[in-house]
Length: 120
Image (cartoon, rainbow, N blue to C red; front, side, top):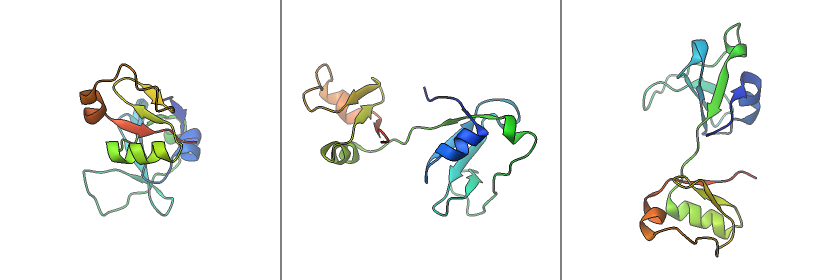
């Protein structure tokens, strides 16, 4: 499970395309996303063209946040692996940085799991 962040830490950590979710108080279950223009906006529905910008106020500065994992396809994970990056298979919280460290994973696990690429 991802680390809980203060609002300031969330703003400093959130990358373009990532989503942060509020975990307590007024902002519980609120979703925010960093846009390509480095704006932090509310995520409303599946595809909303309207932008509602996140504002710092008396409530938001006390909020706690969690940044959601960014899942990638198996192909994207393998490309990142061959570029020398560490990949994680979600179902096992299993980091793979060595091609010989796949012991214990079944073929079905490899194809059907959530993959993430560890940030550097």
